[in-house]
Amino acid sequence: MKWWQIVIQSGLTAGLVGLLGLWFKARIVWENRRREQTSQIAELISLWIVRNYDKKRDKNQILYDTQKKYWELVLWLEAPQLRALNKAFRGGGAGYYKEALILARKKIVGAKDDVKVEELLHWDPIDDGAS
Image (cartoon, rainbow, N blue to C red):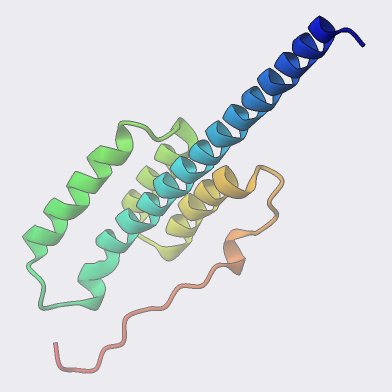
């Protein structure tokens, strides 16, 4: 092999390795972004239901925090997830929240994920008579 062939081949190999590295880095950044976004959906649902669990918290502050998080999510959520969240807030039941969580889960795990709504748990608040 001639010296100029070695230079060309090594340059191509280095270039391909560099491109592959960039692709993997972009993929990891994208996955982390998706995980962060979907955790924000769980945070919104938690903010919405906290008033049922902590009767001592200021209800207006809870609503303000919930509204703020909702507006943040509205700016980037895809239509199916947004509609599921809206349905959850209009319906009010745990089943609706679970639907929104399942849609968010499918964004992380993939569309072929087979976890169903009825498999998710929800704990009702305990009424200890102290509130």
